[in-house]
Amino acid sequence: MVIYTEGLTFKFGHQTVVNSLSLRVPEGSIYGFLGPNGAGKTTTIKLLMNLLQTQVGAIRIFEKDLQTNRIGILSQIGSLIEQPAIYAHLTGKENLLNRALLLEVPSQRVDEMLDLVHLKDAAHKKAGQYSLGMKQRLGIGLALLSDPKLLILDEPTNGLDPNGIIEVRELLIKLVTKHNKTVFVSSHLLAEVERMATHVGIINHGELLFQGSIDELQALNQPLVQIEAENTVDAANFLKRNNIDVADINEHQLFVPYIDKKQMGELNALLNQNGFTVYSISKQQKDLEKLFLAITQNA
Amino acid sequence: MKGFILSFRSEFYKTRKTMAFWSPIILPLLLCMLIFIGFYSGSDKLAKQPGVILWLEFAGAILGVMGSLILPMLIVFIAYSVNNIEHKADTWKTLFSLPISKLSVYGAKYLYAFFLIFICLALFVIFTLGFGNLLGAIKPSLRFSEYHMEGLLTKVYFKLFLSSLGILSIQFLLSLLFRDFLKPMGIGFICTITGDILAGNNWKYAWMFPYSHPFLAIQSLENGKHAQPGPGGMPQITVDLFTKDIFVSLAIALLVFAAGYFIVLKKSVK
Image (cartoon, rainbow over all chains, first blue to last red; front, side, top):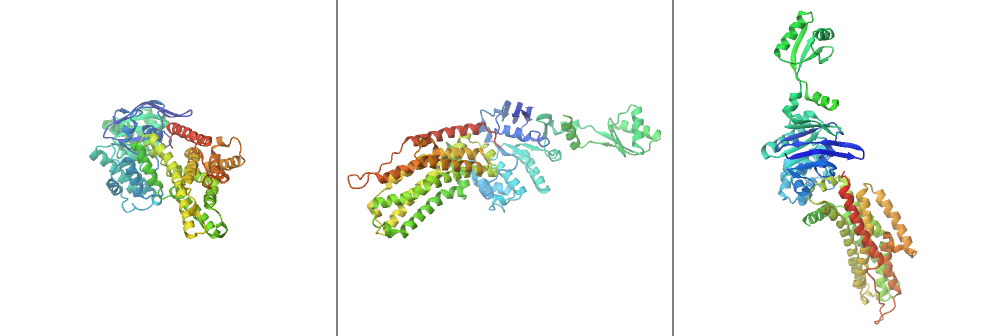
């Protein structure tokens, strides 16, 4: 495991912000750390970066204890926490050069980064004049500067336009598949994480509600039979009288938990034979967004 | 140690285009130049003065303006600037997630502020001597060449530097803790005025109050004007470098440095 936490708990005063969190981030994964705003994502990340002192629990990164190996561990992590930290009075290139100085990275690496995040043309412009998206890209360039093994990114696509979002996503996928990096990326948008993550952790009110591979998350997602019928209310009542569960209902459709194809045929026949005209019947996967809401709201 | 040097270099790199770096250079140049112009235009009245008095008047004019108000305010400004650069850019979190020990990052910033004040005071010595000798050269009626005060002036300014470390460390800590300018500025201003009043009225315990220290340091030269003539007819001015106010200043600097480091370790980084 690249990141391993055990019983990680953090309180601001009396408020528990992170509650016995046990993260498992395998090597070579893109770990999507999901949760609504205020769920404790940034606090967790700050704990991982040793910006907050661990109160209860343990953090192991690269199989080493963070408290006792802080510098060695931090030298292999690139991070972008909340909005990118950029000196507005320096140019984009100077921001990178300053960090290169601190990290003892050769200055040619700065040009590579400018190229990578498409800021070559704006390299000599004051970073304060950058657009939000450019700042975010510079922030990613800064995070990648030391060629770290682990990237920790807090909402990296915030403020990016759709093109920028796609670019960042492709870049992260490339880093993992071609350069053997591990990426830990937080987000409050499931749709975004779903497109790139191999693993997912869902957090709300400081507690980890789900953790596993993206396939495991999909498996939780129970399919439904969507039936479009003439009179959905009467049809639903009729099904209930026949001991068939109805998961959801609206004016035009009703939903029954999917079992198999045979069950779909039987439902169709049953309804039609009893005077409820079925206009259409199909299997439907609940989208992950709804699943995410269901997981975070049931907690 | 390497982390400290890297951090220190980075501090310079970040500030080299800002007023934080340039104000300690421009201030002595400007102030010495103004006094130079004043002496140049009033040279007729000063022509009869012996060299030693000329030097004391010239250096004293610069020191007088600077020590009681401008130096403490410059300290407030520098302590604010080197911290504000991180507050403004939201970069504390990046600084403290570098693979460099927190002590190095914090210590480099702290010493960089000291370094800027040191540069400023060193330039005051250089410009005072430079402009004084220039006056003597272009207006030979002013007998600046009669007396040499390089050693004395260096000693006074070094004492001034030591006396300012207490204030600097307090202001540094205030600026580290508070994002806004008004709190450290307001506290610094009120304390400076209080310090000047206390020292100016020769309060018995002024040596215990760090904001009085620069004033006390300058007094050591002012007292020199009433010095008794020595063997060569020249007054023997001695400046006692390590007086009890200087020890208080150094002790406060050390104490506040340690307290600040403790706060940095425990404080959650925004």
